[in-house]
Amino acid sequence: MNRILLSFLLAVSALTAACSDDHGTGPAAGEARVRVVHASPDAPAVDVLVDGAEVLSDVPFRAASDYLDVAAGTRNLKVNAAGTGTSVIDADVTLVDRTGYTVIASGLVAEIAAIVLEDDASAPAAGTVRIRAIHGAPSAPAVDIYVTAPGADLASATPVLTDVAFGDAADYMDAPAGEYQVRVTPAGTRTVVIDSGALTLTSGQVRTAIAVDAPGGGAPFDLLLLADLN
Image 1 (cartoon, one colour):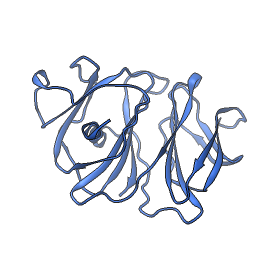
Image 2 (cartoon, one colour):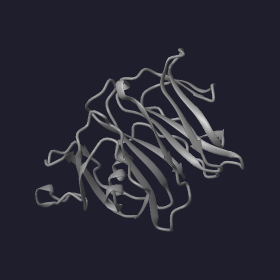
Image 3 (tube, helix red, strand yellow):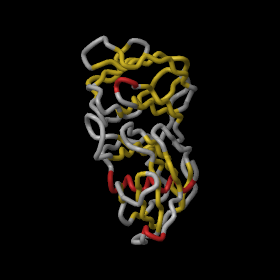
């Protein structure tokens, strides 16, 4: 993953399905911050438990929680079918003091797993935006990503990133403010499945974007935009 991949996330501003509230201040000493994203398209609504205590209930597909304050250390995380004791995810996660995390319930329910990502809510340099991408759509093929000036013809364009597969996650990168157009195609084709249109980047924001399936699985695919800062 590289800087160019992160330009792909600018498409989210036009294609957002959900957005979480951002938190400009970090957690207190002895605590971490955790937000949970339900990205398993054929899973039911879920309850989320930390060390056996329910912290979220009846979370639907494509929903993202606000950041929750959780004691630092090794915590047991369970994701249960809502209203039941049936766990679809049961995992121990280590949370570092004063650190933020995004936990994604990802994949089709038969192979559902937790993706745990460390967040970076520090302010980017003036004139830039910090952003990262996660391919969280299990039914989507690998894709190619084109980043061009607005209105550029793809017939003569070369993808800046090729064969991006489900489960790939980019590191945060800073990108300059400016105008772009991002188009996403199935790998090896020029058939556009996501088109951002003309986009203007605003400096100072930190964002996480997650590609997801349609409810039940499959197309049409969409993007969730989460606000890490501002």
